Image 1 (cartoon, rainbow over the protein chains, first blue to last red):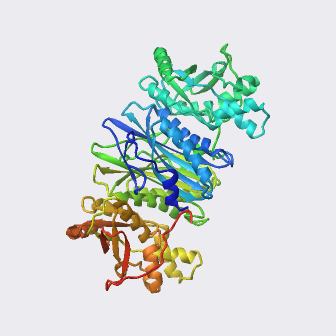
Image 2: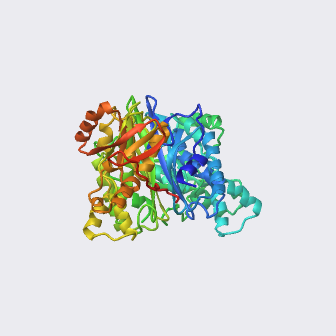
Image 3: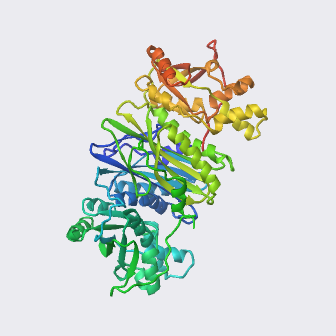
Length: 319
Length: 319
């Protein structure tokens, strides 16, 4: 199958009334028109076989996850998904793989009304690079550098189940098959918190998505805002499967797990009701886990306010 | 070196008054604001080691070429470069390589006032994925599906030298070292025809960039416009190094070479003076090479109008 046949068969779809691109797949560029008063939010993620997913990973779930991690970046900006490009390097044309991959990709894309508008396909080691486009009203995007002293720190959903599954798949430990299967759902098919990100516009001060571990990711908000934080480690929302594990594992995987794709955000104490209302409207649980403070660094406390000393490292893509 | 150090050292640059992104590297997304009446043109290309460039390729030239192929897509739409994202998979952190790669990348980016606004870096087989953003007035982009019967067909610059160099590097034949060096400039550091693309807005009917060979690429315009063409093969502008080769090689490499990154475009006969004026203003030579006709297919003629029969295939990224 030629490159053009491959694109036509698996990635070109019939025109849809909800499509917002002025020109999509098939020209040198796609064309997007922005509404007045709006900005385009842009993010790009590259997923490499053996690094971000196992060789032989289920192609449908991989299609889902490739787009989910990008949608999560839009969620973290409070941006509404619009469109994406897909650049795909494949070792060979495996039609079964392509049918599954595009199936998982488009199922999630349709859920978020996000249109594939272009990209590239080539032969090479399996590599998936998606660049996504969202829209947000000028000045309303949820940035990392805008936390303020006294803000509550919140996190959506639960943390740690994806890391729990990953450790078992890496043979760090064994898990009961049912536990592993349930935890793996979080690892392989994360649900980007797009609705929550949109609902938090005008309420949250700063936000990002938790992909490399809470401590490390929160650290980006703190560094960019020039502030510090205290975290109540006992308040962290623990994944349903992780709850059954040891205290040490629960703390390590909630604080420095990775692959959670939850939103961590800060908001003024005066807006607690508004935050809970946004969470309700987005049908996404949120938990208050700490406070932004003037002193830099992150202080880990237990529920009695006593300091906890943990050696934690965030995931590094070159480690 | 961590991922964040790597990005900070090689890819984050001081703020510049010409930067047009509302928010650049360092958040979940970059933010771009579009001027009223303008559209964003978007293109994505993925370059894989061993497929699009040789293992051990000069990193400075690779940085140049990675961006050049994307700028060429903007040129082919008549879009003005604005910004780009870079997703980069590297087998290891080689600081000398990174310094050279980013040097070549930014030299060309600065030439076109095109800002790096985000992306991703990870460990893996060498893979470079750039997504580029340009702007064009609504309705003025140069598309592929808008050629008209009777249009002249034009091509910029010269064709075939890149393919000539590639064949020698693949040991298909030997070339004199001086010839190879001169031809290699076209292969490794193509100059995207951005100024010409901009100058052709409102003059050309259809356009694309010649990256996989003239016949195949022109075929996209013909197919999308539902038309055909006659080409005067003897009129094709031949690369300076290719001119010294056999007639068979000259014809094959101008018609089906690849890696030229010239613009092929159509314009009405009545606008010949305007095309030449645009070429002059862009300081880019153009040559009239044929005509758009109602009958589908591409007819190859010599300068006497006699039919030439050549077996040619376009480059396919999965062949």
